[in-house]
Image (cartoon, rainbow, N blue to C red; front, side, top):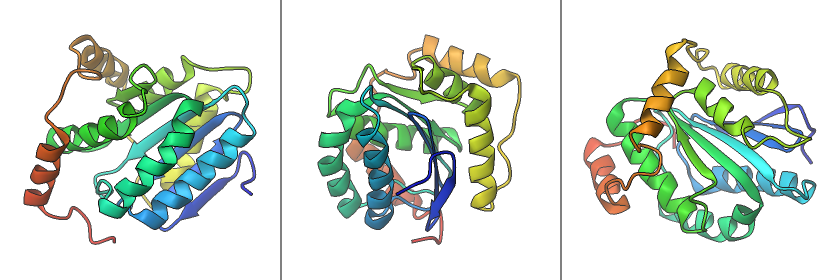
Amino acid sequence: MLTPGMLHTYDGVAATVRGDTLSMLWKAPARVQRSRWAYDVADELSARSPNGILALMIILPTADPPDGPARAENAVRLQKLAPMVRRLVTVVIGDELWQSIVRTVVRAMFLAHDGSRRLVLASTIDAGITRLVESAGPATPSHVDIDRDVTAMYAALDVAPPRRDDGGLAADALARASGTHLRASPTASRAWDELARRGPRSGIR
């Protein structure tokens, strides 16, 4: 059982549970054992959150998208979890091509479970937290507390702290205004083909 407010790590993934909110940082690729751990954390939180949960997921450039077994795990676990998620905000850190690939994968995972109105793809961490707390409830932590949790997760995974800049919110607003969040993107199969051509982004497996 995870202690609320405490940071937990598993093989390149960090998570913090606070109130009804799960914050998660992925440094390592999404493989089945890591995915199972992440879903176990989310399921435990949803079991004690009758009004649903909020989730912030930050994907670093070293965190390759799910392989076949992990995608199968996602399909099974999301059937139960997705209806309990009031909002999922995913922040993809990296260049434009990497962001396009990961965003396509996240859409394919979550939108299959009727999550289009609850999924947000943000351009920066600050913007992601802002979008997350738009769906805040009585048990939701503050923007400041979530931000501190993110900084702690970066430190726990030995990653340099995220950059803070005033342009983040404006950049995210511009992306939303142009339709980046919900616009139809290249198909998932094309994204996977592109990822395969690029090769592994990290030696972590």
